[in-house]
Image 1 (tube, helix red, strand yellow):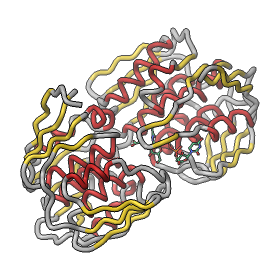
Image 2 (cartoon, helix red, strand yellow):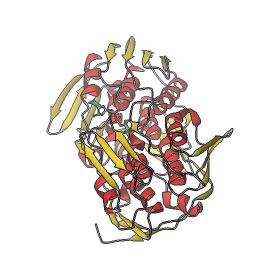
Image 3 (cartoon, helix red, strand yellow):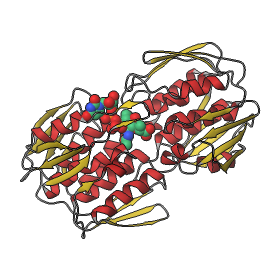
Image 4 (cartoon, protein in one colour):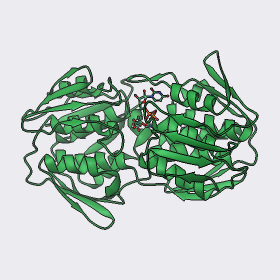
Length: 421
Ligand code: EPZ
């Protein structure tokens, strides 16, 4: 298991490119199952979660070719319509194969995803939607067995604008008989990227980018190609790396329309934000970071996937910040580890009270999940002395060699083989 050995105190300075969005790729890849032939996904990030999805699809008989950032998926030899527990337990997004398999092949056997580092991750909304569309769904020994002759269009209203449930239902509806309405749909940019890919495949989708999607089912879709959007969470993480080290960093390929909530909070905290044609610059060189409250929300609100990173920044701010997660009430595993670095944070229910301290002191800390480990790396960049972040395999799931990007900006991070865990 690798660990990062970080020597803190280096101001970040320079320019770095943002990779393709993990959470777009993990939806675009299963979407290829809806058509027979070769689909191509450009700007695909080389992340462990993407390789896990490739493995899952290849076990079904899907051939993949991944050159540079172009991922080609060939579905002509698909044989199995199953997602086994061994892979689903590693990556919850495997559930995204359920809708396409059921809609195109009339059958899907997918392991229930189980929980994740910060608690249960239900899929009741996914199953409710597919049942409304006529699927027979049984649960057998931890597996979802879904069957249908052909799905029917239905009017579906989600109590929660679930990203995954919206993606699964959207994909399933493209080949259903009749029209489907998804009310209270997620409108995250990754869902818009998925909808645009499906439209290029021949799907009839209206209301893209809004919270009410209308899909007129068609009989067949054709393979196509799509450019994956840039990763707004990687971008936000790198912007906070610049802020926490009082640096000056330019992100090439970041999309301002996907980041307004994060950019405005950074400005409120005293950081200068400059938006150029195809890049975003953050100048924190003489910023005294101010404490700023955040409450996470669905897009376009402040993303839950940036909550841990924001808490890291607030740990060194002047004042007290309240950070509330309204999406996942218990996504605070990073807090005890930040406290080991000297942060002053108390969590009550789904809110963290962060009293800014003058400095953090390097120590050994443990990654528990993807974004928690990102926040520990950010804190290590600013902490005095050496911070060792263990179990960085969590990071590799969602960031493409983040230590190389940060070191290219002047950080000092060594990736070291470690038997500690
Ligand atoms: C997606 O997960 C992202 N993952 C997550 O990013 C992200 O945190 C999340 O959306 C919220 O933005 C991918 O896109 C692969 P949800 P997803 O369904 O689809 C509840 C990262 O760090 N819910 O929108 O699983 C659920 O418990 C990852 O990159 C139900 O109750 O999230 C949560 O409280 C972590 N029933 C809320 O909805 C359901 O059937 C939002 O979950 C489904 C969800």
